[in-house]
Image 1 (cartoon, rainbow over the protein chains, first blue to last red):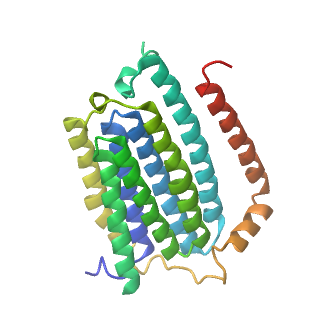
Image 2 (image 1 turned 90 degrees about the vertical axis):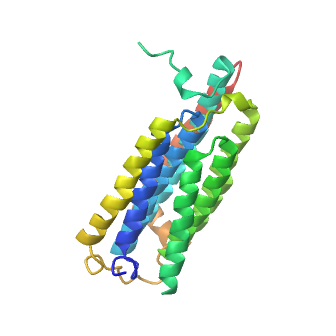
Length: 105
Length: 167
């Protein structure tokens, strides 16, 4: 009970670590390119949660600014990533990551 | 007490929906779970008094990025045989890693950084509101902000070039 009840910054950090772990598990175990991309977004969001938590601990807004930047970069990444998926789907008619191996030696 | 209840409800929804994202076979189901996860995360931002970020999270992530993703999933018109479930062994291994992270690292974190170690700072008024965050962006982080606009422009042009059949 001691560990659980007063919600401290550490609880937010543990939650962030768990969320990051879920993202890593998704990228490692799923071959569907959409779900891999979504797991990447989960990892970015886990990092954002840490940023906001540390911002709250220190009472400094820099973390919030960084989160805004990360969100913008994630939007750019999603848009380019999905364009690549569409181009690949035209070429290979599949979204299975294991079948995208033209560059494999 | 209320704060703890809200935190645990939001954290539970977030983790459950995160697990849904990585375990569903159908990417549409994953994407919709992801939207719910983002709403829960926005709630967590709000409990950390980041009101602007809570709204941006819903507007940009749930409203923008996930809608784009759902559009593309529907556009590609996948056949059911294209959709493969989670590979059993990889799934087991990665969930084991996750369990280690959550159930071993978590308590260690909580022991090493006990409640008294990190105090939430006393906040100045309007912490995390659009005025204060905007002031920070347009004073200390003006140059990175402008560079970001260039990055977004490059991403838009890049996406167009990549997805057009013929230029």
